[in-house]
Amino acid sequence: MKIATFNINGIKARLPRLVEWLEETQPDIVCLQELKSSDETIPAREIEAAGYGALYHGQKGFNGVAILARGAEPVEIQRGLAGEEDEQSRYLEADIFGVRVASIYLPNGNPQPGPKFDYKLRWMARLRARAQALLAAEIPAVLAGDYNVIPHDDDVWDPRAMAADALMQPESRDAYFRILGDGWTDALRSRHPAGHVWTFWDYQAGGWQRDHGFRIDHLLLSPAMADRLIDARVDKDYRGREKASDHAPTWAQFR
Image (tube, rainbow, N blue to C red):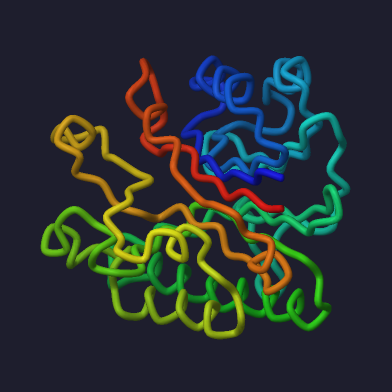
């Protein structure tokens, strides 16, 4: 079983690249982020034609998450996180193929300090509470998405360049590591402990051409899924294609 996460950066703008990737790599489950589309305008017919059932939690122009399943229909469990009234579409959870999967688009938090950074930290605390509930239920689960957190200095091409960014603040990292400390495994890190594996390259300043990237797309695995992990990688080449997202698909494979 192959489970992937992909911040598509506009599902309508990137539809040819998305369908191309689905057809060429055929992941079993896909978590999408940053759809930038309402549920009514998402190109659902094209996704279905590619062989995928889907759940969408869209938002016009911003945010938005989805879960796709190859040859199956995901069963929705929850959309949004408890604990705060929230109009932003950032969390979607479903059951597929015996696994609980969540698609996550964590707030960016910039500029920091400020209300956007405070919202990011509150959101991460709410995510941790949900993740703890899943662990307590002993459900095989994968929390996949764009976490907007660079966990380690070797997860970025130049730590100094991002030192003031919300993605690298001690509070952001601490919130991320608290989730891991509860019993979740960072799939990509477990297979690439030396770091220097990027999932995002900015459109600005030749980020892709100079390989100035960083890692913010993560798949966190419950103990049962961590035991089944075979491999985890980034489909880096797709970032270099025409009109690509600024993120590359990131995936984990399980026995």
